[in-house]
Amino acid sequence: MIVKDAMHESILTTDPHKSLADAVVAMETLKVKRLPVLLGSRLVGLLTDGDVLRHLPALHEGLTPWQFALRAGKVKVSEAMCPTVLTTTPDALLDEAIHTMINRRVGGLPVLDEDGLLLGMLTLTDVLRTALKSPQNIWGAVRQYMTHESIGVDADTPASEASAKLRVASLRVLPVTEHGQLVGVIHGRDVNDAVGRAAATHGDTVMGDQFFLRGVVTRDLMRAPGSVVLASVPMRDAVLRMLETDVHGLPVVSDGGHLLGVVTVSDVLKTLVGASTTGQVSPPSAPPVA
Image (tube, helix red, strand yellow):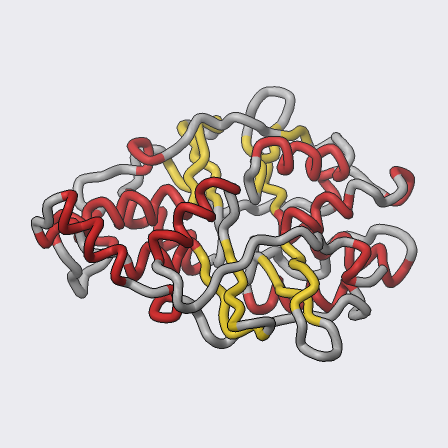
């Protein structure tokens, strides 16, 4: 399978001379997390939601709404975008693009033709949707691909420790337990949002998460477990659940609700790579990096 079998061609772009505020409106309206930046027809950068957050005015400066809007409106896309962009081509092998996404921890790759013109984007969501097109008989059960010794966190653990576990293990989501029972999940994006809110009212500090999450426990930031999967269900069903709930990982539980592990987007990506090379899905050979 090649990239053009999974990519989407209908994409929204922006211009480096546009204001960051205009780009934010476009991203929020269409619910996208990244915008390719074009100068004429040439790709010159990529603007992500993380880039936007890092370049908005800080609320702790005491700006009035008018001043905040004025300052934000003066920031250009060229000032916030990442000018070095990982890309792929439509005829590249999909598993090679997947390897790039896993190893470089990016959620999307612009797809360029041989002349460097933008043809579309390949995102994690595209890959998941492509996974659902695979024949059902090549999929095994979730237990074959999940991380059995899942890194979890207790509900009363300081949120700063949960943040450190997410960062060190390169995970996007952690199961939260209490007395061995799954009671929630904590997402990296929720931790980042909490830190961002605290930083906006205080200002930056070298202590980072430890300072901004002081007095906050994991229970305060966790979400309800929402979607979980049983170890016995087909991996394909787990992929569908991730798409339906827009998450990058699902806790795996026993019939009694005890946490057994976690299955992540990285497990899916490695599953697809195994299927493309052998014609049959093979369990990942290394721990997932979600």
